[in-house]
Length: 111
Image (cartoon, rainbow, N blue to C red):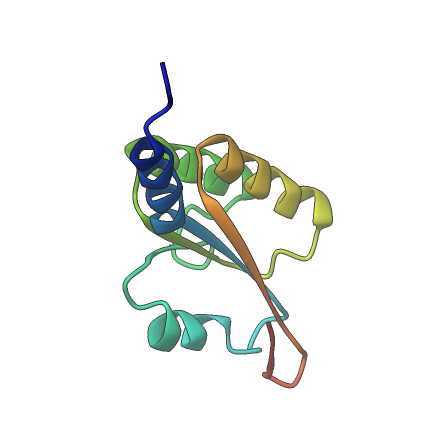
């Protein structure tokens, strides 16, 4: 039995429509502004607004991924590589496309 090529295409397309964006940058570098202007259709997960801890963010992200929310952005400084790696692994395991956007200290985007 041959594989139906449309099934593979649908799987790829649905993965591309589900994306996690991780923002990385110092406070005041423009991450939240970027969310509002470039990712306005995404569900924003912000440590400033709660949950207030890394563990809380991980739990909330897990809930959002299980729910299948199509666009999620983590708006926090995310300075630690290990923490970004945890977010990335969670997203990939749930079939999400991953994008990381870095902001320099003067507010510019280094995408």
